[in-house]
Image (cartoon, protein in one colour):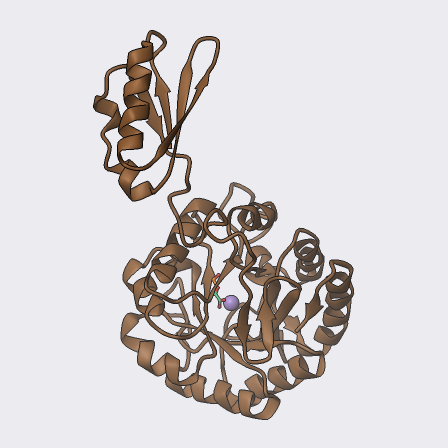
Length: 338
Ligand code: PEP
Ligand code: MN
């Protein structure tokens, strides 16, 4: 914390602040500028925050310098976190390519997508069984039957599965099947849901709210970490801006910004960010270039007949070429698809 003294603060008033810090075992580093004196408080934050600096004579303002999120911050955890899911990893030099349909529609649809993902060297399978749809009249997902189909695909391919949880009442059901629990953009600030997934031993892929700041995303991660679950993967999936050419605007700068501020791995979802299949490859490559630890992309055996998000889904027979190009960039970035 920084204590900024008033322009006319006296030496006694400055010394008083330093003495009060010393009394709680902290240090006050005094820097005297031409006009203003600033005291940097260093020591145990709980002890320091118990001091009422605002009430001390000569103090102008008090500014926190530590981030409001603690567990998600690099200040408290300088090393990259590597989240492991079976044989895959995200973080450090490990990159994950996650692919599959937006929603599980049928066994045939899902298994075809899963086999292609496996053949192309994907790390994990994605798929929604509980779908957050804007319209209550749209396909809402197959529920537990969809999760069973995903489990069958895992059985056949050996690839872990990533699937969305929307409601704390479904935690037990989703935990029976999911290797990674996804929290969608619309639930990024569903604090009860975040606390619930914080209590389970399963990695969580937390998508950025479509109108959330980076700090709000990191505060949402903090809710999960605070409950004891350290395996949080952040996901940039596009934000709302005034630009209508793409479904959302992919905030590419968010990746290096987050990685500077946090030790948690970051994946990018170029499918939802753009809503357009021809933009998925270029933005995937750009994401790798700016430091992403993974990609989550939508594929479908027949995008034209998809019940959800067909226009942004890569046809499964194009996924091999996509994965080959992504792998080239991942290797150039000094990482490998695990
Ligand atoms: C999804 O990944 O299926 C999804 C609905 O994404 P988002 O929450 O980012 O819209
Ligand atoms: Mn989708």
